[in-house]
Length: 309
Length: 249
Image 1 (tube, one colour):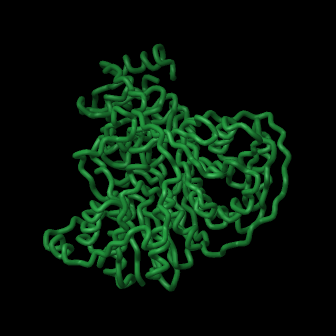
Image 2 (cartoon, one colour):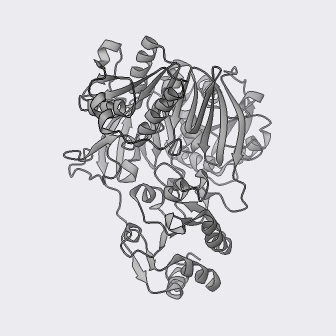
Image 3 (cartoon, chains in turn brown, red):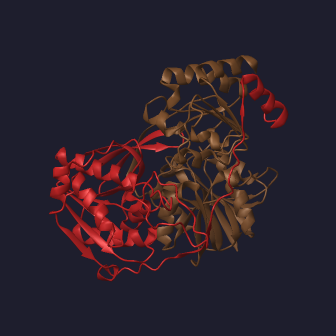
């Protein structure tokens, strides 16, 4: 029995989410193979080979994997299916995009966003924005699974996997990347940060968001996040969104500033170790999950906090 | 160009669901049900495509119990031309829905299927991608902008790092994200008109699809509750707690 993990990477380096997925694979038992599909992706393949517990890294290096389109990745994964009982990927935008396509081509169910593994067939996953946890059993021969990365630790280094080149699958040629507008930031990646500072509607404007929260994030070495209300209002771009349909985070410290705490937002951050809420409304639902609540005007409290740090 | 818009009847997004005490699921008795919010965005987008002269017909489809007719009438009130209900009392999981939709696509030949990226009940985020795979079509998930011209769809997607724009060769499947559009409210005259629009009903067997569930739910539990903490008096006390009690900074 062997488990195939689909690597997430930018060709040069492995994305952190892959390491959490490898840990989930290790819980299943059996050999762990990692598939790296990319273009000029030797760097990513070598990084995957160093992950503890990985036996084999399969590399498909071809121009039509440069953009990581679901059509081409899914076709490759299906071509590689022989010998695997489980195919795992992180529940990131890439994993969510690709894996259901793989499952449908294999005529199996996908088990989405798992937070625990009971046995090789049985998994726990949140439903209803995390207001319930369902334990589900799959009867399919191959389990296609996406993994909630915050629920599994990152795999360590020190592995020495064999790297094997594999043949690319044909180019479907139906989807072409026209461009990417990726947020460039020197701050830690939101989904993997130890401290997250998040702003909501209470920030009032994009200008205020940056002016008030950036100094705090800088002092703490934190990632910046936002509620859906702040993203919808155009304060910050979509990749800041924490919540049911945005990013799921579970940092050591989550500081919610001017966020009321809709259930959809709580779904994305309630597994944080320590939650701080700063809000002028003493009845805001966010205080029901906060370890430390400060009822105050954020425009006074946050600069005061920055000065005191 | 005909456009299909699959819609799902789900617990309203404002409802805080309760897990049943016997652990078999969540309590749906007397709970407000609505159209999945992402599907509402999908209907709106399709209707806008029709208003722009890009689409010729918008067909809303739902797979579920007879009560899903209500959801389809909402779609018709927003502006869909007609509706199809695949009626079943079974627990239809994403793969089964994708197969039912494929059968209807094969029958009617739409060039575009727009649907929500995920349903807010089971949070699976699978159906659109599965349908694209079964049809062998291109796909663009998590769309925040859709431009269709000359047999191609340019779709801007919300991805983890920001945005990316794909050019798809049609036919294609597009799944919607929150910021694609703001759905209109159905006006009373349109709600009245929607009652007269055609709604066809099929059974899964009519379409030759086996909808037997592949995943068995063994139990459903409430997650561990977070205890509300304390209110601190000021910034100084907050900082003291974070440093000396929680030890996180």
